[in-house]
Length: 109
Image 1 (tube, rainbow, N blue to C red):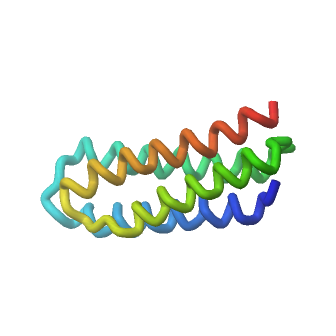
Image 2: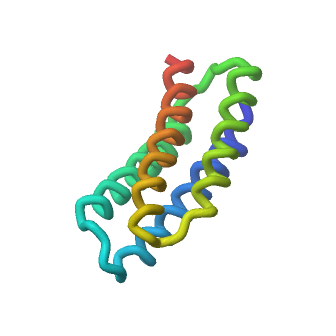
């Protein structure tokens, strides 16, 4: 498994979410939606820590497929702006990223 690529994707996701949170926080958006996005960002941080500590044994094919899905989701996330509609989409995209990365963590158990 290429842990560096995976961590790069997760760090980039965290960075994009942090920027989106900062931009959105100054606008008039639903505070619950903003809180949900912060929670998803915190899940990404948790996953980063787990990947640093874990001994992952996912197959190369599983890893490559996951990296492609992570890349596609990260690209989608980077296209979002700080509107309320984009906030909801960012939450959904981040949940997808968390699911993909969690699946790889589960493969190591």
